[in-house]
Image (cartoon, rainbow, N blue to C red; front, top):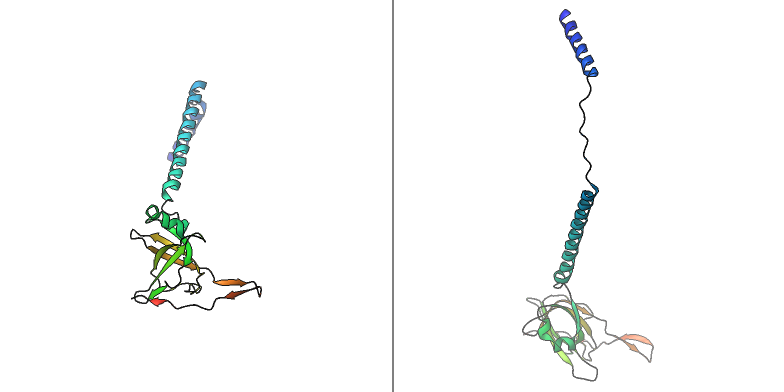
Length: 196
């Protein structure tokens, strides 16, 4: 017991000495002159400005060049026929009329071939041959002997001059009959001719 007491008394003495001794001085930071602070703030502002300019420049480049390939040009037949070289290989939405009697179908492998025409009402009609490598077309896409089936196809023009379609859309061939004041459907539809 005497041993523990002696250790405790030493501990009390050491604590008393520690309380009596003054604490070591704490080093105070030396304030920077005002001009040095301004220079640091100016460098930070310039760095932030440069970073923002780089980010905006990168966004502009992505918009200008990245989406160029994804853009789809919507053209009537007459415009595409007039500038075929300019649009070869680009994504195009071609709008025109199904040329009557040109719709052909193959079952194995599935493919539709037809011609889309367009031009001024009183001028020469331009024609673009189209190939569509799918089995299903819209119900409204029918070969009407009297014409009038408006077609929109999406795809790309090949170097050979035909249009490789990935999507075919046709507008309803209903016509307004002024005598009855009603919409009527032209029933004179023809089936697609088989491709030989």
